[in-house]
Length: 125
Image (cartoon, rainbow, N blue to C red; front, side):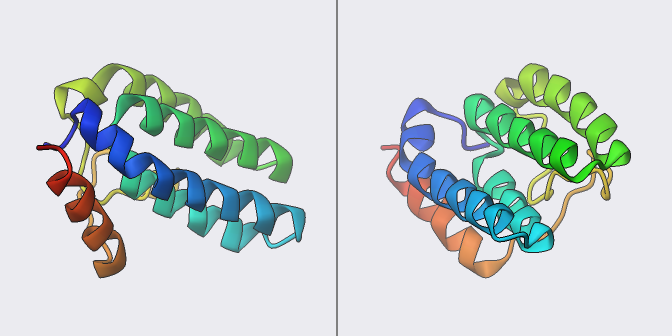
């Protein structure tokens, strides 16, 4: 599992870029695209406890703004899981992080995101 401090440092700009795009789409009223960017941020940052928790907090805020109770409850559980399990590598690779998928489901990583992750991993050394 890729979870070193160097990985976090290398992947952070990509996660932050996705979070910025999510905020932009929310301001534009495009909630579906906003959540897609949150999901991308989740896939990219889920190996870093700090970034993993941050993305789930952003998903929680999205749920509050949208009034989505199912997503809100799902994110509460995922925040606890991210905070307590990530450091041990107990995260399902590629999982998009929303309440619409099991928090245990391994998913394929889109090629664009996989390339970014691999680049960040190569910067660990």
